[in-house]
Image 1 (tube, helix red, strand yellow):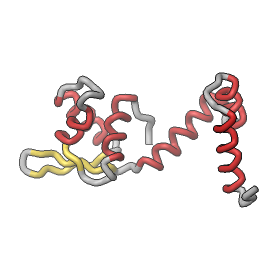
Image 2 (cartoon, rainbow, N blue to C red):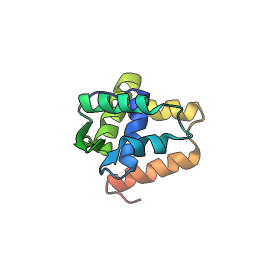
Image 3 (cartoon, rainbow, N blue to C red):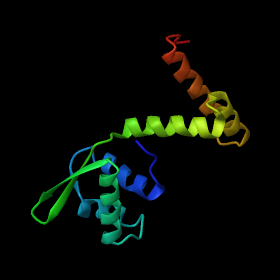
Image 4 (tube, rainbow, N blue to C red):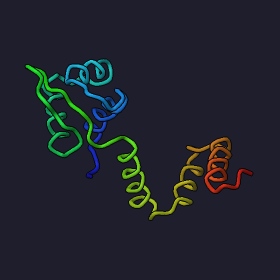
Length: 126
């Protein structure tokens, strides 16, 4: 699975938010209204690329293409998060948190929430 460019990721987020079921290009275009100024042909090109790259399957129903996600959102997010951590922080989670904290992108409340998450995952509960 390859990393998605931002425009294709925007399309996939709409498809994933749709519940992972079938969706038409017209539905995708409607969801993009007010968010992106893309013509329907642009949306169709992105959907074709996503199909070629193996993120979507497509079937024809009359004159309409119906798309279905092949890659689920969680799988993609795990891959993208791992890649981000490796590329920018040398696979160091503490480096990521330190960068967020020193850049004021993470608050004390965020750190407390992170600590609770880690404690719960570790089975500590404290």
